Length: 300
Image (cartoon, rainbow, N blue to C red; front, top):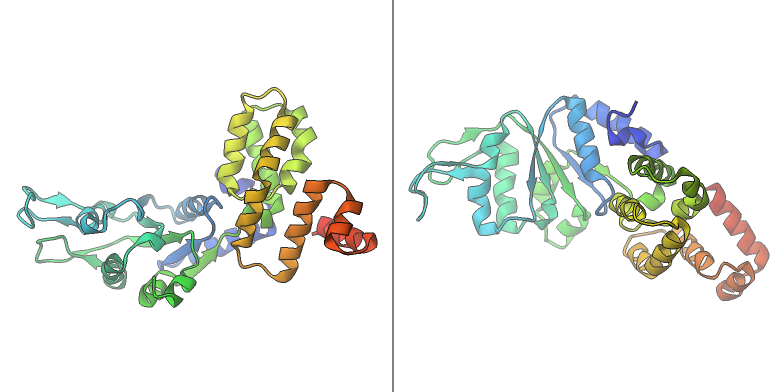
């Protein structure tokens, strides 16, 4: 019985991550979950909260004007500024013993990062115009779609804050590195949308071999579109052909090893030309070398 969407994942990464989160759930130390957009960070946050048996108070760090953010987070006292006609509780006051989940911390400016650092260090916050700090009983989870270590090197993210929020750190890789999870997600959404199972058999290999640059969201969006299609195969092939070039651009943005980059490029050309003789000519390698590489990729 599926009790959480994470339970459908069956890749080696997912099994290890579940065990990792069960171990660190015994601690109240801060957790940073990062990875590309749509890779399922929110699912893992929710899964972790369920292990801890706590509710989540989510704060989206990309949606607030920095000048208004302090009042929005910490609240304020009557008369703290022009227009403050009454006391107002901020989000942190509403947290109580929930997990405070700060989603997208890479979007915070330096001023806000400094304010957040004090909160994370002291587990207290001061509403605007107040004289006494309020003690926080919450634990924290943070997420980022960017590698914060690189942002600290560029002085775009405070190093002290990074080390405070990443006592435990978890990277969620893109789906193309987790083929087993792609298979599980396709099956899950196919059943959820009551799509034709016979049609799934015809397109399953194509779907699993696609790199899904939009990750989980892209799979869900595609299956939503299939509800209105009679011919799944043609629709999926047109969709993938249209997205191939963008797919490669997204792959090049990642820090891949030369071996992994070669693999992605060869698979990209294989899908494009369908003909191994043409493919070996373009790559400048013998057909035997190409067959050996493709055989290895199939095993991977």
